[in-house]
Every structure is written in structure tokens, then in C-alpha cells.
Length: 433
Image 1 (cartoon, rainbow, N blue to C red):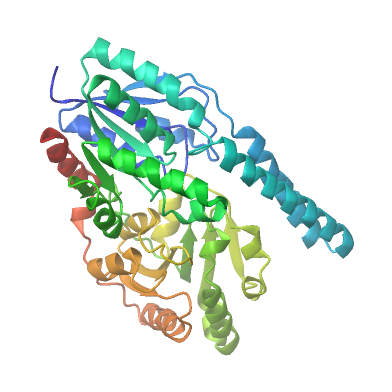
Image 2 (image 1 turned 90 degrees about the vertical axis):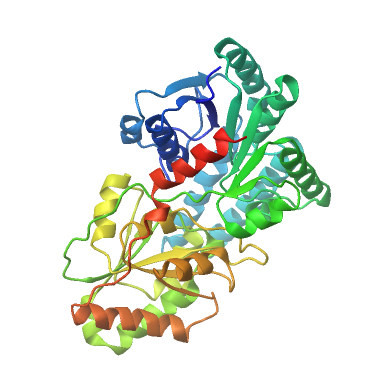
């Protein structure tokens, strides 16, 4: 067995789009460049919310991609999402009566509750649970036939970790669990799971994974600190960025948000501050350009605060190459964490995408969050609490005044967060397990 051989189990893999696929697509490519024989394991018929076929072209041809056949069960749940869109369309339609909208809201609320209860009672730890056994069987055979002895599982979905743990317990491989998001403490789990017994199951499963894995990776320093209490080999592995985004001249003061924005991320004070600046300064109104790119929650779009911003543009998901061009024209890049207690251990992957552009970043998160800390550490902008209106507004106007004066950010690009630099760190860690 070559010590330079490694397996990577990733549910999200090209042609998947979005930010979740980028982390191990990049690291896998760079591990090949560093001399590793990389074997990727993904699935034949995955249910990806976003597709980007151009990602397929980015796969290093040296990577051996294997696709596992398994039963998927999320299609039933996506049905309610489309119904939700119909509801919002009806509510926004002036010809639709309030009584009809209320009836549809009740129907959807009941449906969503039923949906959540089904997930909670029958789909633990997530909707990919039926992939655990076929994945374990496939990997066991493959690892024996190809003399592989090291596996990285990346989640969510956390079912990938349970498959890796099963393989570890059966044939004694070296196994690293990569947590792109928290698990038991993740805000989505708290919102979806209402039964105390379910939360206890998540904590128990997370503990078992940390107890059995040889090492764990996290994307935030505070999550690493929490996991160190249960495993001494926990490493902070940020997602990083691939290459610098060169700036392009633009005649507007562009404020840009990219990525999905859930209701729990809604930066109400940002909309209010922008509304006030537009209303009070005619020149600012003429110069500002507000663009959101990605899946923006309809609750946000229909909120009173957001509706105050009339001159803004919302674009649907676009491939990274096109998004880089839009980012290159921006002056202020907005990134939001979640407005939920004890959820400070998340650094959105979009932060690192922004970092590559060397522009001013405006972060909105809870005070003391990992997002706030990394913005301060990299000197890439400013972060504000969700409740901070005045300082947020003043910072936007300060950036605008610098734009009018022709002054550009003097931030120094931090090359420690280059994907290749991070891959070299992964190389050292895996080699020493």
C-alpha cells in the first residue's frame, strides 16, 4: 500500500453547484498535485439543489471518481418547497384574496410540520441515511481490492461520517471526519428537530464519530475547541480560495451579496441603513448599486425592511466564473452568519471567496462570532452585530466616500488561505496519522 493513496467520500461532487462542492474539489485536485493517488467516492443519482456542469471540467484527470448506487429519499420533501413558492406567488399577487392566501399558508404550515416530523422520526441523521449501508459495502470491497487504508468523509450530510465509522470499525482503516458545518449544535438541527430525544441522538452520534475517527477537520476555530474535548486530533482546515480575483473598474458603488440567504440570516438593519442613505442623499442614491446573487428566502424578499430598497437587483445562481466577474466590480461584499443563539461557530464559505477579491467585506453576525474574528484577523473589513444599526450605516457611508475619492482598499491578500497552502497542511496531517 502506498502511503500516498487516499479515499475521499463526498456526497457533493460535480456536477453539483454551490459552495459545498468547492472545498473537496479543490483539495482533491491539489492533493493530486502533491503526489497523492486520490480516489473519490460519490453517488450515481444524487439529489443536488444546484447543478453546474462546468465544475466537471475542473476535476483533475488523475482523480479516480467512483459512483455508488444507493436509494435516495429526499424527493418527497422537495415537493413542499415548490408549493411554498406557489404560496408566495399567490400572496404577492394583487388579485389573490387574503382569505385564499391564509388558507394556503395554513395548508403549507401543516405540510411543513408533517414534513419535519417525518424527517425527525424516520430519517436520522439526515435524508441520506439509506446510503450508509451500500456505501459501507462498496468501500469495504474497494479498499481491500485497492490496498487503500485512509478515508476522509465530509459532511453534511453526516450520514457520510456514519458510513466511514462503520468501515473504520470493520476493517480498521485510518479515518478523518471533515465537518464543513457543525453537527449537533448546528442551528438547522435545532430548528428542524423538536424532540429532545432526537437532539440526544445527534449528540450521541457526533460523540461516537469523534471517538472513533483518527482525526477531525473543522472550518472554524471555536468548533475545533469544542471537539478537542472529545478528540485530541482536531484541526482547523478553512475552505480558503483558489486564486486571486482581479478587480475591474465599475462606475457604480456596488454592494454585493452572493449565496443563499435564509430568513435566519436576514440583516434587517442593512436594509434599513441602505434605505436611509438612499433617502437622505440624492448623490448616494444615484451612485449606489445593490445586487444579490443566489437563493434569497421569500420571507426576506417580502419583508417590510427589504421592500424599502426599491432599486436593487436579485439574480439567480450563476457559475463561479461569472460570479467572479460580478464580485470583481463590487466595492463592498456582504456576508451574513445566522441570527441564532450559540451559533457563532460558523464561517460561511463565501467569506473566503470574497477574500480572494481583496475588497472590503461587511460581515453581519452575533458578537464574538468566528466570522467577526476572522474578518478582524485578516483585516478584510468590518463585522457588525445584527442589532447594530448606527455603526453599520456609518461604515457603508465611509466605504462610499472612499469610492468617490478614488481610494481603493489597501488590504493585503492573505496567501495562507490559498487552497494549495491548505492542501499542503492536509498533506502533513494525513501523512502523520
